[in-house]
Image: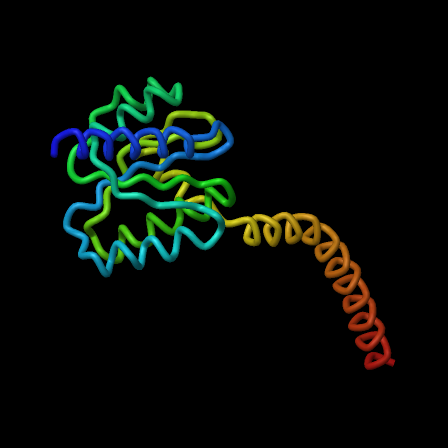
Length: 174
């Protein structure tokens, strides 16, 4: 009986180790207090873009992280029930989604992770979660480019309006 459990754990660790590619970002969070329905909802939101979410025991996670070369992340202490999100695309959007669910449910805590090869903690996670999205940044850049042009147009209109008002005032005096 114990050999089956041991083999099952070995399989879990080897599968997770294979999934921890260097090109994937790793987000580890505590999901303690979430119901199965809430966890499945989070899973559905995150797994939309070829990402995976797994609830996994801390010891098995640490072994898999060590075996995949993520020793710095494996040395961290993870309180609560751990889940891992393996993100291959749109990591920032996934971070925002986890933060949104965390705020709405109040039961989800980010613990640690690897974002673009850098180890991040909860403070950096919150900073990343509050960054504007790609579309917002594009809109901001366009408005910055457009703003001087709009100012120039407005300034030329103001001068034209002043000229018209001056000519009307001169015409009224005559």
